[in-house]
Length: 94
Image 1 (spheres, rainbow, N blue to C red):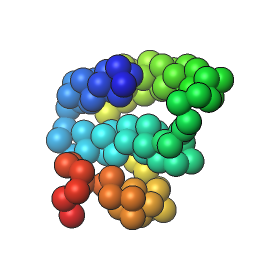
Image 2: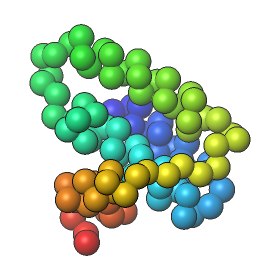
Image 3: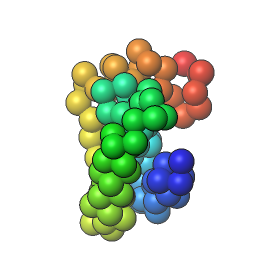
């Protein structure tokens, strides 16, 4: 949970409002998409530790890096996120 909040705080440091949405979508995809670790069992300690290390590296490489101004997701990923209801600013809104 703290890694997700850290990512949201780092997104606020990005320059453009349009790119912030893309960073937010990327963060949601990483934490909530079933193929990326969303829906893990709370007892799957090895996978959870692996995902935490991976998320920490992602924060350092992508979000904390000041030279990273934009990020883009493929249309297929955008469509998957829309199908899961995770592509709007607030969950549950179209």
